[in-house]
Image (cartoon, rainbow, N blue to C red; front, top):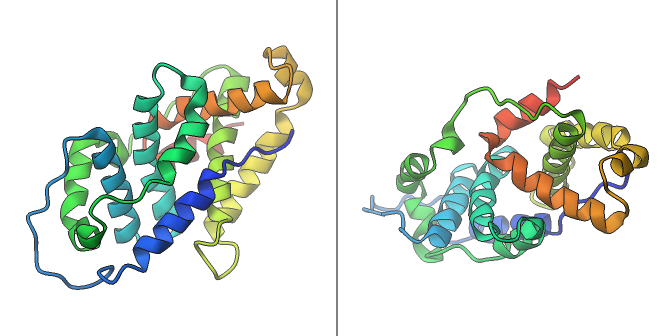
Length: 221
């Protein structure tokens, strides 16, 4: 089975690098009374970039922050869930709101993000679907996505331990998701597999904190 890696990874990494290079990134600015927007798109993007900034550009922080983009894209694809991966690429390429102040506001905004989206900070144990093909497909979609992120140019020091972790799991799951199993699940061709990948990524992302979901995937037999 060919690993499917969304082009959104490039957009995510590039956007994070641009924000990290902002003159205000890491600067000790005066405390501000920043408030999270009520608009879902602005709030989701703001929380994603605030988490990236406070995470110092680490791949793990970017992986966890991606949950905000998942959540926003789920809302935007309710009527057409099979377009999730395509829409996620478009969402990931959007610039951060209020670029000039976001880096200074990030620490103030993150608690508001945690309050607005309690699932992102939840550390509860994640329960995966009971059907073996469904849960392996969902875990493959997530780890393939995260592996693509880790393989981006966000880290210039070589392949990160996190990248090796998710990449190895994605490869192991890809080997298990054979053509025969795909056909048995009603997936007849590459287009069907791409559609299933999109649906699987959409379905696994609301299960909980991405790192807790990853732990559940790693614990699969």
